[in-house]
Image (cartoon, helix red, strand yellow):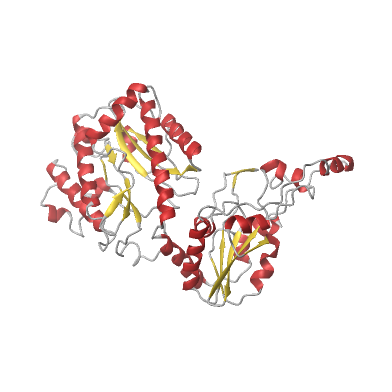
Length: 474
C-alpha cells in the first residue's frame, strides 16, 4: 500500500523471533467501537464540495493531500496537508485522496485513507514509518467517514480501481506523484480544477473568518512575547524562537518562515536567516503569523524600536509608511479593483519621498507607468490574499484576482513598506539602513472592510505606548 502512496517500498519489517511476535500480538485491551463525532466545520466543508461540484457536472474530481517529505536521510518534515484538500474535508492526515464521484445532478464525496489495522498485523510494532507504536494511530476507514462526514470512505489500496471506472477525470496535480501517475494528464482540464478551487477560496465563509481571527489574536500575543524579550535579548534568533513557541502552543505552527530582521537586515524583504544581533537604537522588523489549528494563518508585520523609542529618522519613515497604509485601507471596499489599495499607498509613499528630498517631483512624473521611480525604495505591492495559505488562492485567474474587483468575504493583507539600503547613495545618510513595513489583515465587507488585526498597534506613537509596559515586565 505504501508503494501506492509515495512510490517507495514499505519500510522493511524488522526480523523478530516468532515468540516475540506472538507476545506482541496479544494482551491488548479491546478498543471502543464507537465512531468519532464529525469535525465542527463538517457542514461548511460539505457546502464547499457542493459549490465545486456545480462547476464540473458529470466529471470525477480528484484532490490528494500529499505525503510526508524527507528533510534529511530518514527524518521527515512535520506534515502539513494540502490546502485545497483541507478546505474540502477538514482532514489533516497524510496520504489521503478525496474523490468527488458524479451522481445524478451532483457528486458523492469518497475519501480514500490508510486503514488502521490496530494490533491485527505486525506493522503496528515493526513499521517505523507507519506503525502505530512508532508514529501513533491512524484514524481508519469507517472512522474517517464519520469524522469528516463524507458519503463513503475506502482504503487507499482501492483507489486505482475506483479511478479506472471513470472516463472524465480532473486531478489536482503536484501533491501526489503516485496519484498523478494513475491518470493521463489533461493539462487544461486539470488547470481549470486548480483555478476553480482557488477562486472558491477567494470568498471566506463564517467558519474561515473565525479561524483567521483566532490566528491573528494568537499572533498579537506572539508579538508581545517578542517585545518582552527585547529588553534583554541579543539576537534575531531569540525573536524567532519566542514567536515560534507561541505558534506551537496555541496553533499548528508558524504560517511561513518568520522574518526577524533587525537593523539593516530589514531592507532585505524576505530575510530569513535570523542570525543577526539586536542593538538598541535600531529597529526590528517582525513579519510573522501563527497558523491556527485549522491551518488558517495570520500574516502581520510590525516594525518596532528595539529600545522602545524611535529616533527622529525612524519615526519619520514609520509615520510615512503608516500614512500610506491608511490611504490603502481606505480603498479596500467592494467594487474597487484589487490594485486600488496599492495605487493609493504608492502615491503617498512617492510624495513622501519627494518631501524627504529622495526623489524629485512632481508626483505625476514619479508615478508615470514608464518610470515608477519610488519602487527603488518600496519594491513590492501592498496586498495579497490570505487564508489557508499565506499567499492564498494562487491558482485563481488573473482577471478574477489581480485584475478583478474586491468582493465581500475576501481577506487580504495591506502592507506598504519603505526600504533604504545601507549603501544607497541616493538617500540621506540618516535614512540609510532603515527598513519599515506595516502589515494588517483585512476582510472586505458589504460596506467597506474590517481590520482583523486592528488590536495590534501600528501608528509609531501607539507602538511606543504598547511596548512600554511590556518592556518593563521583560
